[in-house]
Length: 231
Image (cartoon, rainbow, N blue to C red; front, side):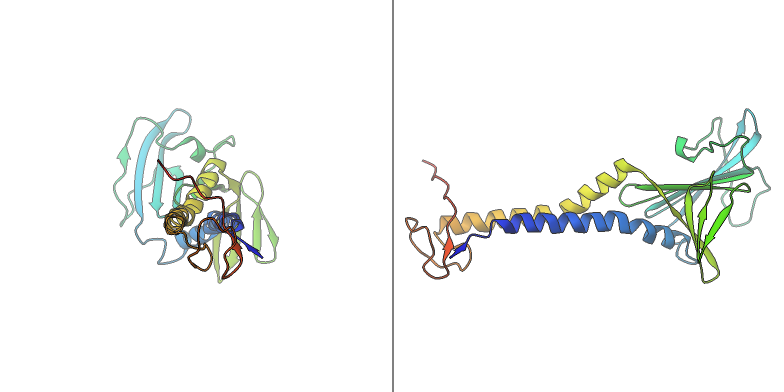
């Protein structure tokens, strides 16, 4: 005797949750690689340059690059304008968010901070030039403090991957990726079961049998407790 597949909802929920975790975590290295790959990182990207007066370092420049799933900030001393880059905007205060400001003292010559994730940023990394040492592990380079990134040296190109988890973004991305397949499936299943219950059909084989019978005579599926009809 077969029972109504109520456990299917649990299995579908677990499958959607697994898929959501894989997408939320696995998209981070893919987006980081795409943003730093030649000819791919420049697609649909915007670069903003800023100049401001730092109380300790004097004139300082900061640049922000944004593209799908990737945001990076870096600062350096003010340099002459570079052809092909937009003109910097002069601002009164440091435009960088707190996660993009270096924590080491004294400040390094150059500091790169980046966050990766879609739709929200779920991982962060940063490194300094100079001041960061790297420990070779085959083709991988694990940056030592004060850096927080993992570098992959492959095909004569180094790609940096974040290793700091941004938990609010990771949890939010997991919920979003979980809801995308699960909510439509739940609505479809609810609509289908409502129609089946209204027409007194079997949930598995759609065989029509009286409501008083608990077990389908065609496939042996047990009928779930029917909802009371609205009076």
